[in-house]
Length: 483
Image (cartoon, rainbow, N blue to C red; front, side):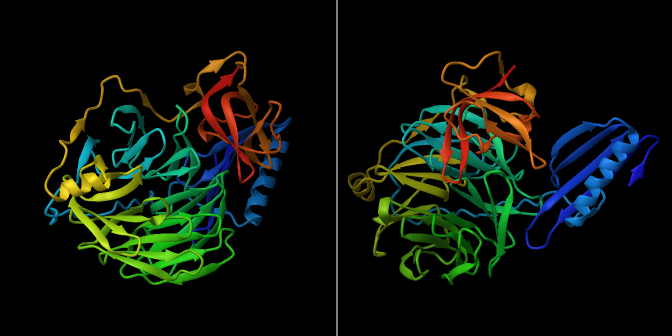
């Protein structure tokens, strides 16, 4: 405890082995005012201020707060004593393709930095790169918008129609509205490799082979350390969380109840994909392996000619696609028969997705590439006939959105527009949560809401709220403060 003339501050930390809690708690007494600041170590955290009738009562209240935390395992610490977040970016080499023909590329958008993040839905294509840029395009390659995030994008994941970007700063940003916001803040001791989100639950795999599970309120649920390190794969569904690392794939019960199965793979896992009944692991030993979700049994092996950086399938796993370290892209039949191998024409595919006879790739040179994967186009490409790839340009007027960093960044309204939903920030068991005030909603449910703009008692207007399976609401549309 450090003491000035009228100000005293106690700083505590709780950091458990094995990827558990990693939090701080700071209590400052300044005369009759007690200020509590708390959150993840390495983050700014949240602040609460209370004024008491006398200095003695303020000090007594502070002592109670400190005592409660010490009993829970917090201990005195030096603020800033912990090392900054470790960030590992995948070190990749990309050799020229040995394929005799080049894939039929329809269009290509160069983002300017190596790209790992991709998602394609009914309306848009999303690409996220190491510079922290996320672009959305339509299926013909027209650029629609840009999100400017504070750090490099690890991956893009979808949960129903919500899109999240996991970044090197340890935050996971919700990009589903015009105003992106940090929905999750991952502990600073987790060196993030890959992420997945299922029904609001965030699954994080890391350098040490840990799996960390966080709920929609950004609260740690459970963690496990798998048999291998360098866990580049995590996929989740109702049945399990599938964790791929350098010793294979391990499936865990979604509630943290324990390991369901473990299957060694042929080489360390570098990428993962899932369908309804199977997971697909791309490995450093030049294969993609299909594992049954219920048992972990290896059902098929798809052999490439170099280390596999990415893989994907058509719906139901009818066709299996892979991208290797030698700038080639492959297509296999369900049983493992190789149908074709073609050059990407622009670096190795670090991630990919198939949709409506098109294969979308993000590559080592930072491009989002749209390949015509129809049987006719591929047959023509194998004979040397490919379309002239169109280079997509970024328009100067492309709208750009950045995360809110303070309440002042949010626009204000004096009354809620017709059809809008009103929510309120409230103190609940020592945490600042957001509940719904408008009729027609369950007022006991919390709302996944930007922490950076929460203020006690503040009310906000959102365009819409949608219920999630985990018993909470997600925001759709703009967020405005209600004055």
